[in-house]
Image (cartoon, rainbow, N blue to C red; front, side):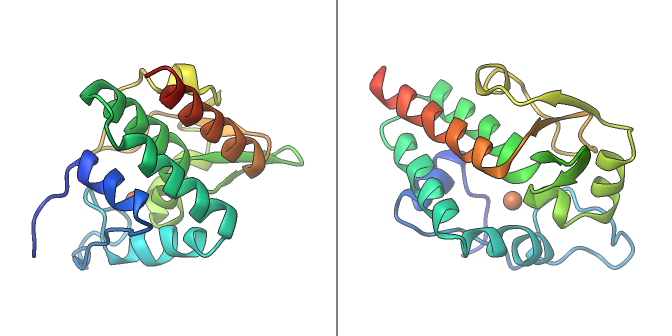
Length: 166
Ligand SMILES: [Fe+2]
């Protein structure tokens, strides 16, 4: 069935270890960027990460936090997901690298992010959860971690705290 999947439904599927994927493919006239996720994004960006056990477990945990969440909490989970799983960057040996699926699957977005055009900030879930992100332009700023493990640990702590405070 075609159609948009709400953030709540998307996250709910993650709680059941299901990752909703699109079958759409970007038009050949705009190969460097697509405003909507397409099959290149899913195959190049998300699927390799989901093959990692730690990441797939974290993904499920994220989804579980969305079950019974308020609309405001769904928004916060969506923002955290956006700035990590979709657009996360990591600084290794002084070099900025991408790990987010939205960067790994978009040549144009990747160039924008790593060429100094995007402002790079330190990742902080408490800040990220409040930021409304653009979905139809290159990202004006991104959040870096010092290791993928740091991203996973801080995301995990965030969702645990959110659930504990309910
Ligand atoms: Fe995505």
